[in-house]
Amino acid sequence: MTSSTIDRILDAAEAEFAAHGFVETSLRTITTKANVNLAAVNYHFGSKKGLIQAVTDRFLGPLTQQLHSRLSVYESQLKSNVNLNKQQELQQLFTILANSCQLVAQKNHHSLAVFARLINTAYSQSQGHLRKHLTNQYGASFLYFMKLLRQYMPSMTNEQYFWRFHYLLGTMVFALSSSEALVAICEREYATNRNIDQIMADLALIMASAAQAPMNGDQ
Image (cartoon, rainbow, N blue to C red):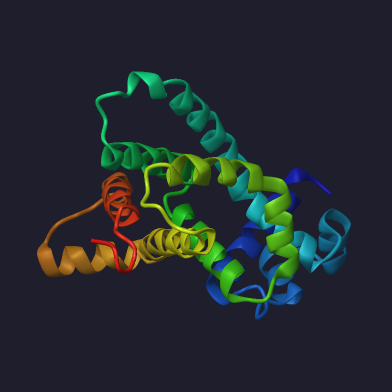
């Protein structure tokens, strides 16, 4: 089997998982679309679970590598950022996340939407093996991001921070997973075109503001 076979399987699985979910998508559907037999999937990925993990790795591998690298640079420059307020620091951090995500779209501008749909599916469907895999493989990079982020947010408990972070993540996932439809609606309703760079810049600003929202009962 060649690398092109692996790519065909991953491309087909990525599209089907994003469109229909992990549970609803059968290996038969994927193998038919990729024009391979079931043995090829088992040979390269071991099982459907292995294929699911490989699909997410194709996105999260380069994303987290870039994120970690940019966060290291950001942290090394913190002492020189004396004139930035919390809002600006948060916007910088979310811009780093946004720019890292945009690497996913370098070859295909549809990829960010697909990636966001896969993240949503990972949360909405019972995929304990995937969450465990993602935590083991990429948890350190995201914990690094969350640690830097939290220092500029209001004081809150760990549980409150869990919810706040996932509200922010949900904002990004919805905006990206629906970006193609939203761009089309905006073009039809307001006769304006928006590209992914503008969308990500808006997201960084909005998420920075939302991250600073006071907790219930705070003035």
